[in-house]
Amino acid sequence: MLVILAMEYIQQSMCKQKLSTILSKTGLLFFLFFFHTTVFGQYKEQLKKYYQTSDLDKKAAIGLEIWNPLILDNLDSLRIIGFDLVLQGVEKRNGFATNVGKRTLGSALIRTGEQEKGIKFLLESLKYFEESGDQVIITETLNEIGNAFMNKGLPLMAEKYYLKSLKAGKNSPDPTSSFLAEINLGQAYIGLKNFEKASAIIQHYKKEALKQGKLESVSNAYALLGTIEQQQNNIPLAMEYFQKSADFGLKSSSKAQVAHSYNNLAIVYFEKGETDKTLEYFMKALDIRMETNNAKYICESYFNIGGLYFEMGKYEDARVYYEKSFDFAQKRNLLKDEMDALFALSELYEVQKKPGLSLIYLHKYIDLQDSYYTTVAKESSLSNELLESIKEMELSNDLKDQQMKLLESELTQERVWNIVYIIAGLTIAILLILFVFKKKIN
Image (cartoon, rainbow, N blue to C red; front, side):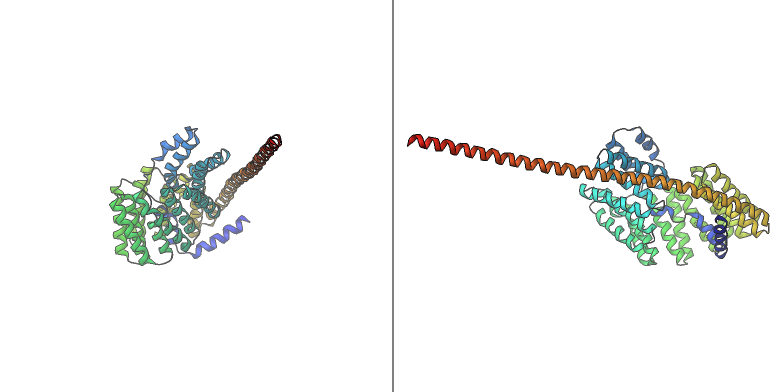
C-alpha cells in the first residue's frame, strides 16, 4: 500500500513546477503568523523555573509568560505544559490554571493539525478570561482563534476573530494590543486576494510598531509587504521591502528574522533568473541559522540550496546539499525533513538516469514514511487519551458540582422546614399561654 501511495506521490510531484521544490522549504510566511514581540530564547530559564515550581498558580503565571516564545520556538514544550496545567487545574479545581492550560494546549493543537480541538480549548479559555476581564489575554486569545481559522483555510472566519481582537485591544493596558492582530488580518486579506486592503492594514501595523520601538514587528511588516508586491509581480518594490525587512531585523538583533528576510530575497532573485544572487542569499541565510543553531531551519536551508542546484542542473552539488540536509535531520531526529531529503535524492537520481540508486532512496523514503506515520499515530493516540482524560475529569467535576448543589438545595429546604416547624411550635405555645392566661382572668 505504501509503495502505491509513494508512486502516486511521485507522479503528482513530477507535474508540479520545480520552483515549488524550493518554495516549499523556505518557510516564507511561517514566522509572520504568530509573531508578537517576545525575543527568541528568553523562555529557557522560565521553562526551567516552571518545572521546579510546585505552586499551581505560579506555574500557570509562568505558563502565561512563556506562551508566546514557546509558540515560536518549541511546540513540544507548549503541548506538554498545556496538558500539565489542564490536568492539574481540573484535578485541583483551579480555574485560572485550567484555562491558562487550555489556551496553551489550544495554541499547540492548532499548529499540529488538530484545529477543531484547538479551537474548542481556545474558546473555552476565552469565556473564562472574558469573565475575569483580562483584556490582554482576551486580545491574544481572539487573535489565536483567528490563526486557527487561517490554518483551516477559512480567511473570512479568521477576519471575524482578528477584528474582535483589535476591538478588545483598544481596552487593553498593553499599547501593542491595539494593533496585535493587524499583521495576521493582513495575511487573511492576502488569502482573499484583497491586496489593497492587506497593504493598508500592514502599513498601519508597521507605523504603530515603529512608534512602540518594536523593530522585529517592523521587520515582519516589511517582509509581508514584500510578499504582497511579489504576488503582484512588482519585483523591484518587493526586493526593496525584503531588504528593509532584513535591515530592521539587524537593528533588532534578531538573527532569525534576518535569515528569513534573506530567504525571501533569494526567492525574488530566483524569480528574476539571477541564480548567483539566489545562491548568495540562501548561503547567507544558512550561515545565520548555523549561528542560531535552529535545527529545522538549518535542514531547510541545506534543502533550499540543494533544490537550487537541482534547478541549475548542477546535480553533484545538489546531491551534496540534499545529503547534508538528510544527515543533519537524522542527527536531530527530524523525521519529516529526513523524508523530504530522501525523496529529493530519489528524484535527483531518476533525472540522472540512475534508476537503481533512485529506487534505493525511494525504498528508504517509504521505510521512513512508515516509521514517521507510526510515530505520528502514537503521539496522536496519546494526545487523544489525555484529551479524553480531561473530558472525563471535567464531566466528573460537573457531576460532583450538581450533586453538591442538589445536596445544598435539600439542606436549604430542610432548614426552611425546621424554621417553619419552630415558628409553628412557638405560635402554638404562645396561643396556649394566651388561652390559659385568659381562662384564669375569667
